[in-house]
Length: 124
Image (cartoon, rainbow, N blue to C red; front, side, top):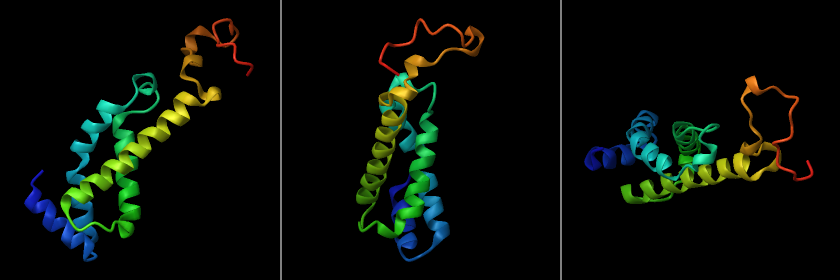
């Protein structure tokens, strides 16, 4: 990821060039994916992949780019990281903390549905 070309892409995107915004976001995929892999809770990796979180992040950044008020590449990078970490937190909340979607309740389909003896006893 070349900061010179990304800096110029950021300036062009802020001037309204949609293609530059697309290229800029594409340049961040690998970086965000690495961050996502390092922070995605192992207990939900069976349900959510790091690249899914990155795609959600890039879609949100594209959708909300008009609200980005920074002027520099480091500010843009921080903005993307914040979106990514919000998406990671949301994934943990949805897939790990919500009792009705508790990953501990997941069973391979070949185990059948009739045996609930291994389910957590949490009143659900």
